[in-house]
Image (cartoon, rainbow, N blue to C red; front, top):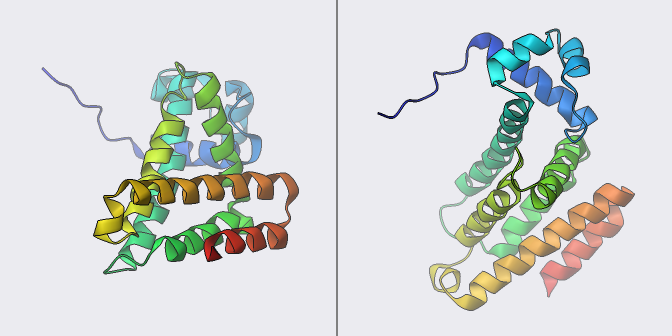
Length: 190
């Protein structure tokens, strides 16, 4: 008989939101429950009760960050009745990714992506693969049907995704928005 987890309580949701805000500033790699609990007005025991373990809390925080990303993808998708083309969607994505107010979220994304590659059995499991699939799905919807189903179309959207990820890493490392945006524009123009 299958069981489902009950909907989170208001307190669990509140603490998750506070923990998420904390993780955007402090990261997840070296997360310690005691400083986190103090910072968000809770206790390690309450966090363990609500999330089961530190790994359970990290999984919940990763799911919360992925929700932010998926909301972006759905928002962009909803703007178009027809496939607008990879270049249009890539420019919208880049504009969203490069916005200064999203640097904490993007830094957290890079941390979680990297951790899922080096610690694939832990709470990070499947994070990188899942985000690649999400972004490729959005890019596919930007392509006309004939292009979308072709191997060339798949290669093109994979290249656009790789370029955006590389540009994001460069931007986070240097903060040079103008230079990196010019490189994104140059890539998309060709």
